[in-house]
Image (cartoon, rainbow, N blue to C red; front, side, top):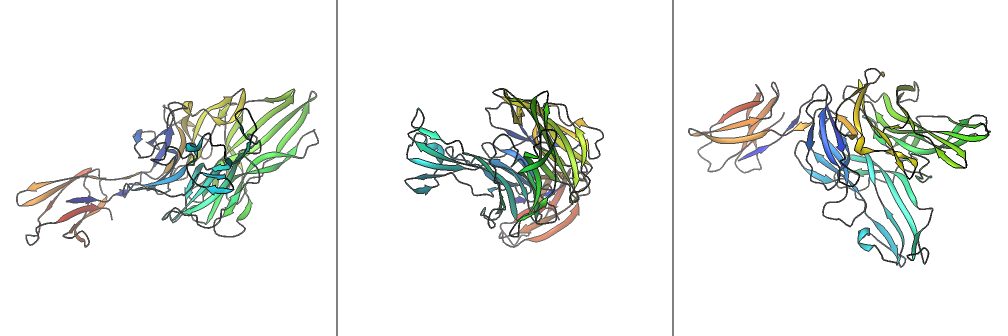
Amino acid sequence: MLGALAWAARGANGIVYYNRFTSLSTPATIRRVGGDGTGDQAFAVNLPAPIYPTISRNGRFLLMTSTDPGRPFKISNNVYLEDLMTGALFRTTSYADEYVSGGVRFTNDLAQLYGDQTITRYSVNFPYHKALSPDGTRTVVMNLWKEASVVLGAGLDGIDVISSSGRFPKVDVFNVANALPAGAYVYLSPQVRDGLNQGGDGLDWHPTLNEVVATVSSDVPAVGNAGITSMEGTVLAVFSTTSIPPFIRKLTNPNAEIDIISGNLFYFGVHDYAPAISPDGQRVAYVRHVMRLGIQSGYAPFPAQCSIHVINYNGTGDQTVLALADGSWVTKVAWSPDGSQIAFDLSPQLVLNGWYSLLGDVTQSTIHVVNSNGTNPHQLIAGAGAYPSWGSAASTRPTLQIGRNGNGLRIRVDGLTAGQPFRVEGSTDLRNWGTLLNTQATGSSQFIDITPNPQFLFAFYRVGGP
């Protein structure tokens, strides 16, 4: 009998994981492609709607956000982790729907209670952005926590949700081993995600420190001739995951502009979001969105102006890497494993009810790459793709076959890389294993001859990495 272990094959270009959306009403799928644009293929995972794939820096673990398998009436999402070395898949967060009825709080799945007029308050969770700690024992998530109060007797159907309901960005840390919170939440935004700021759009964990960079809502200084000195915006901030209070410092300090032009008021709000820390921990790539609004007879929105920036982790040296055409939208950026390139998704800004939203049209999104100094921007894949995450080359599991070879056994191992060390182990009780052979692969396939010990009726063999 054969068991298999696997190992990470570290390629220079690494692997980019991303989502593909065929329509806005169908579940996303996950795909992966080499950092050089080759080998684009589907990645199968046993989750109903996996989105925002996030690969660990070493390429072994893949984090995904999804609704819970087997629970179609649960609205809250959770984060799941697949170990690409073993194939194990498990949940790493423990979010649940909550509601209040008769003054009692419940955690039953909310969607099965549509029409229940005894509910006075509810909350659901959407932990889209996430990252692993450097040691792989904890997961940090940016949870867009939605809480709303319900007023009975209001509205045509007898139920109405008050206008103060909305999504509050919340940074939580969970233990990977048991999916339980690793202490109190790190940060809860004082401002609701209301369509005028991008709080909650991204975070990342430093590769060596117990620190995360998160996108938070903030009033930003404003210049211009209107005499208004600040307006709502979004900045990047650094937080500790182990100390109270967790806030360390702002990382970016953008300035907005408010002008009166020909008697009309124009807002140029600045929103920094989608932070990605470089593999060496020295730089942070992010997206800056200038939101333009004209106040004439009501709001008159203009297409977004997005650009990709890089700033040193200490807050100095902010530079524009790539400025994009008006109306182009970037949701996520990711560093290459060697820190020389940045991947990003690019799509038309989604227009909802005539309003330029803080979203891109994921059905028309494509993945692009640019050098970290701004040179050589190019498309990575021709097909639709969104939410890229770039890690070392994906871990693979060799395929094994066993057959008779005279009085012995012959094992065929496929999926190897020439020069890659591996070992063969044997056991007669599945508890105690001994090494039978240490060798190196001579090619993508290799044959190994085994002579079983005649004193044992049964024996088990496995092949593993170093």
